[in-house]
Image (cartoon, rainbow, N blue to C red; front, side, top):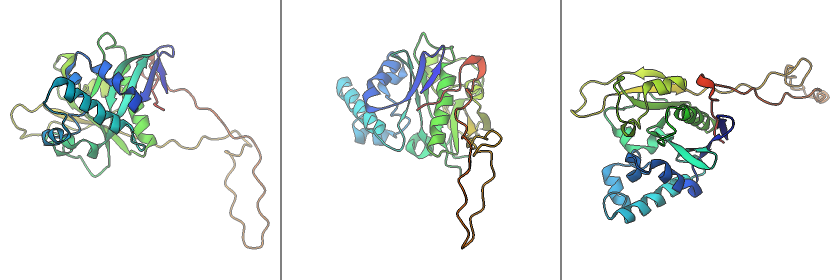
Length: 262
């Protein structure tokens, strides 16, 4: 669980029981008809799933069911939801790159290398809560969540340039936003894209493995490992001392903690 702003902000993995919270976050934006599914499926796949076209109520119910199924996966959820108290205020889509067929197949976002990255294709914060560090906190939580599940790196494909766009069309996230969360540009805008394509830059953050905590002098964690006993030798005595517990709290820019989802 991640906390910020005096402990009021919590960032949690999406579950089937929280799917309607995604609808609340997306209400009144482009995402109200997306439900985090358009970055995942091609137009043909959407028609096959029955989540494209049709009566608004029918399509919405099917989208909800598809997202709930994704959220039930044991290995990784479909994203993270940010709450201010009990109120859902943000959502970040997250998963292995191969989960997002349009991203995988896009000429604007081909693989940079052979690293099995996870990706953040879109991020949304509700109106009235933007500009307060919620998006950056969600990105940091997404990196921690991905790293705990074996991701070596996380990528995002942000809109190039600093031109201001309407908030509802900034769902890729901005370069500055991801830089605040520790990402760096690993590839600029590609040439030869079709007319009308959104120019993107590829941002990446490598997931650092946390080393085992160093122990206090004389503790078990501080002692060197004992060699394995040779045949016929007595078993080594257990190391004495107390292991170190607890981790220092990490804080990011603007005093917003580097959120970690649990």
